[in-house]
Image (tube, rainbow, N blue to C red; front, top):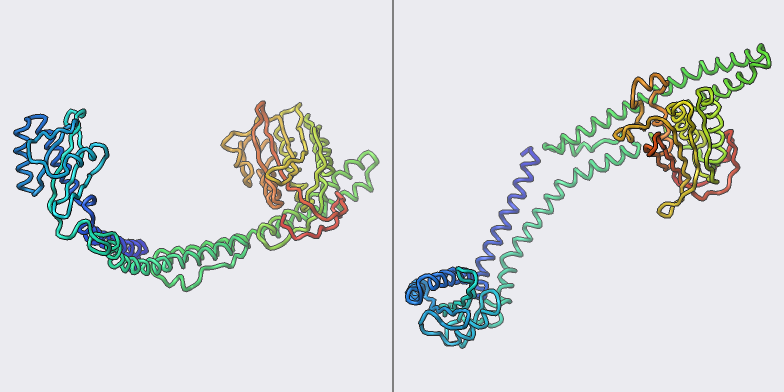
Length: 489
């Protein structure tokens, strides 16, 4: 039996058969020994009563008496019919206590019983509506005497204690056997799922060598195929990640070499050039150094997300960092008839890797400069907010561009995603800036979201958690003293 579906179907089918057979047998046993109010007699009595009321309303008293005679001959129930005024309308002999029982049945719903004495058969009564829906009738019948004493004494057939004993003797053994079957079935089915879950958790924790146990692969059902597919997937992910690491290492090496040569060329140009080009050369050198640092930080980010390296956390003054970023962005934006302005700065300090935080904010600001309309201004603010008992430093960057289609709001943080390919080619965008920003923010337990402004443009909001750490000296040039703390970023 190789199919897991067939195994589940047969096992649960067997359990259902056992439970239904047990319920059926128990129902028969208890029904035969239950009180008459739980007997099928109530349904039969209801049919007789409804028919009698319809015959009386349609054909009168003689037809009703004739019908009740036939009922008595067939079922041994001596029945009479009372109208809503308590008058007996069939003309038949009234059993002892019939009027009292009819009055009681007319005031309550359901099948009513009366046991006048041990010598007289029990009486049953049922109130029903006439065919017109307005009249009310009560049929009272003297029922056949059961073949055991009624009402039964404690422990005798028909008593509650007797019924409980019968249930215990018939149903509990079946339930015990069913519980054993279900236990082994659950263990048989859930054991492999637990193994798959453990392997999946190891893979998500960064252990790319995690694989499903070989014992699981010896089964011959769908779980075996799932385990094999998981191992193939894990092996493929491991090879892709390793290839990515090698590719990033090669790219970083190839990029750093021309950057180093560019630095040498800038130095030579600075010695040969006049004072008028010194400022431009200094900026070229600074940007080259920053690009070199960013390449290294991109590699560090990739290694951190793979769980292969940790980041050196320092205390970061977001006010000073944001001011520096906006000054640089404004310098570049003015050449494109745009500007960047800080509209609000509240003292905020977070903890993390300085260059990654710089990269996250700078990519968002530069993206705003790229897509805002000419002659407009990018607004940047830094505030401190408390949410659910936690305090966050909130950086908001608002441009005056065309905004982003609502369906693409969440997509702009994916690598290489472009809202409009032609526009991005014109602006020089690659679709990486916001993706790198999102990864850096997530690495610091922060969030990054975007929304269209009501009056046009895009608002990007970055939230960094603010935590209490031991004091550390802040230096925006990257020489911060590490913060000794075991909390996660």
